[in-house]
Amino acid sequence: MAERARGSSPAVTRLGSAREHGGARGPASSSQRWGFGGLLCGGALVAVAIAAAAAGHLGELPVMVALAIVTPPLVVTDVREHRLPNPLVAFAALGLLLAYCLDWLLTGSLDPGAIIIGMLVGAALLLCSVLGGLGMGDVKLGAVLASAAALVHPSLAGVLVFLAILFGGLQSIIVLVWTRDRRRSIALGPALLAGYWLPVAWLAAAHWV
Image (tube, rainbow, N blue to C red; front, side, top):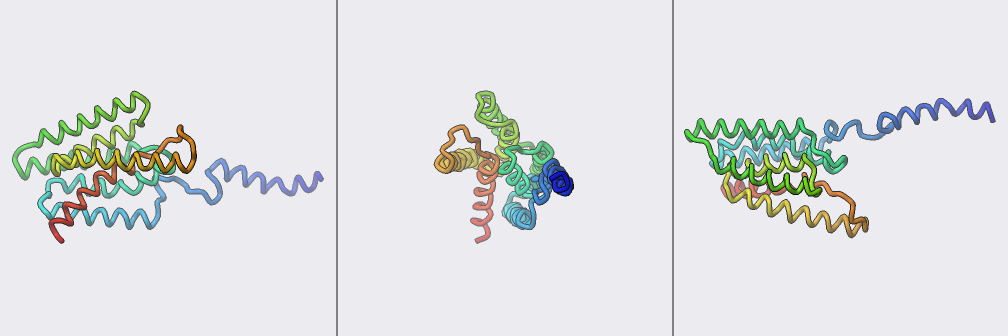
């Protein structure tokens, strides 16, 4: 028995080491390894962003491209870990700032409406977070997305909020039916991002098709 135990200890040690580092075959990091599908999705979103910019929204191109880059890792990380990494959200916010600057250079003025809409949506999401319904990552991402959508057209921010609530509600129902656990949390990031990209893609398609 002693020899068998000693013989198996290296395997046990390797197993323990693998568990400490996330498993021998587990993903290294959700925000770093999202695979070929993520690259394909990101490329498609960049194409949508360029099409939308060419359709008359050139000033919004920086934020659309930034969001296209961070959307796949944000979705994967939120679904797997229920968090939205600050560096990715900050990258999107930087794209929004550049979009404001480019829009100002092209038009000669800033769009205060988009700034106000982003602040209002952010404040509403912050209230939900204080009440315990959302994480701060959702608050920050929602504010950036709402302002970016309003920069394209003010009505798009309303569409974004509606679609995010719709998709989030459907996701909650599916999770509740599947798990029977009312305390089970959902990833709201994908719903927010879908609420942004669907109307942007619709505008691009309506112009070019």
